[in-house]
Amino acid sequence: FAHPVMSMFLGTIPMGLATIVNGFVLFGPGVIGGAALDVAFGLWILDALLAVACGLAVPFLMFTRQRHSFERMTAVWLLPLVAAGVAAASAGTLAPHLDPATGRALILAGYGLWAFSVPIAMSVLALLFLRLALHKLPEREMGPTAWLALGPIGTGALGLLLLGENARDLFADGPLAGAGATAFGFGILGGLILWGYGLWWLGLAVLKTGRYLRGGLPFNLSWWAFTFPLAVYGLATLALGRLTEVRAFDVAGTL
Image (cartoon, rainbow, N blue to C red; front, side, top):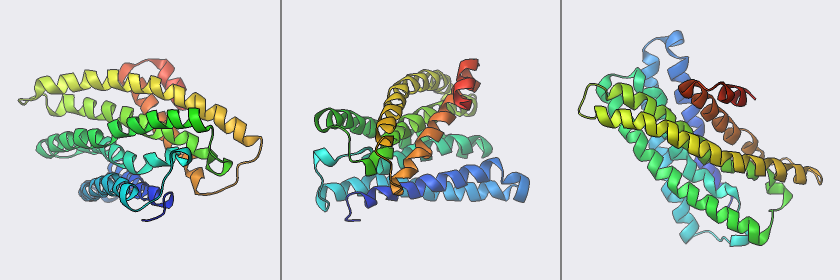
């Protein structure tokens, strides 16, 4: 809790749990039947609570117990903040498999978690741009963290797409029918905007990694950044392809 880098990885615990939740939703019913969805719902609640705790407690520790400096800032700062956004996207995956009332509540909770995560993460990205301009690239041991910028962007886009898609269906027959239709359109437009924003950080990550490779990239925990951020950005790309029926997104997502 006191370490200025290791504490950031606490956010990966709820993020990893979200993949288990999604696995129970997508594959569990074929293995253990309907009980899989009950397990998924229970784990999602735990996931959301852990994500909120990480998103608030770790920054509070940064402000009170840890020692930080602007020149040593990296994209690792994003890890505790992104967890709630991942839980929001997971809510969009789980909601249509529950009873309508619970599904609607889950969608609303998902939007709350999205707002708890993505805006503050975008603020950190703005600071990261300034830090890179003023203090140049971090040491090569932290080189893979360049890819972490895609995390909040990918999860933010994916969350808007999944929540909007299912809000349209779940709210169709109720007082929020208009909001559901708006959420679907906003999900596509918001997803497209975030996807385009992610292209800039993706290109920068490729350039930075190429530069680091010249001197070697020592293996450490930061290599985790090579997997999750690019994966969620890829999932958002594939979701855009499915919802817009633009084949270019299918090709880009596959790549």
